[in-house]
Amino acid sequence: MKTFYNTFPKSGTGLLHGIRGINLHVTMFDKRGEFRQVEDYIRSILDCENCTGHVPYYQKICDALKRNDYRIVFIFRNLRDVVCSLVEYVCKRDTELNVMVNGGVRLSHSLDPILDGIDVVSKWWGMFAGWMDNADAVYTYRELRGAALLVGKEDDAFTFAHGGINRWQKEFKPHHIEAAKEKLPDVLRLYNFQGTYED
Image 1 (tube, rainbow, N blue to C red):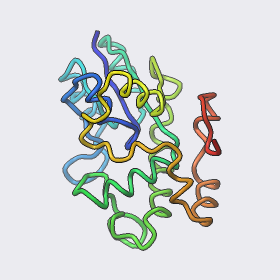
Image 2: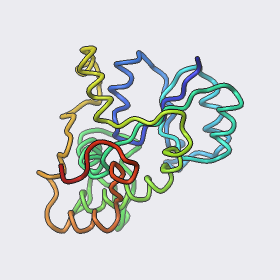
Image 3: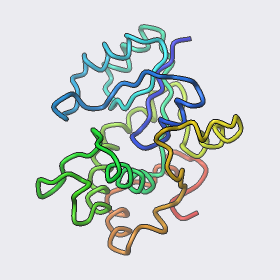
């Protein structure tokens, strides 16, 4: 069966590649660093039978994939841990995810990358959240990591750093916690998945 594994950024794409042996990935941005056009996302996905991607939700994309008999799997993560993983990732690599933030600098050069990362992740989640109700299956990073451990594939993920669950509790300062409460929904609780921000 044709499957599109759509992951929210920093929610285990590398682990998924290791578990499923997938080599094709649909990037979130175009060469200019801007979100791609809807038709471009669709063409890229339909060019492969099984691939991963970071693709925002659009009804047109969802309809096109279902018309072409794709199963859509969406994987997400505690958004506070996404922030920690994103900041660590962009500070270590030249990556498309190293976006411009307030003040016109790259996230990796921000004076407070966690605070700016909260803004970035909040905006991205607003674009991806529609998959939660429209994908054929939805899994958490915690579930994906458990599957990777069971099959001995965790070390195969080239982007895997610490694989931290609830890392935010060690890295967030009080002002980050307040900003996250204001801007980042508790997606685990909101969609009745195991775990919350506090556990």
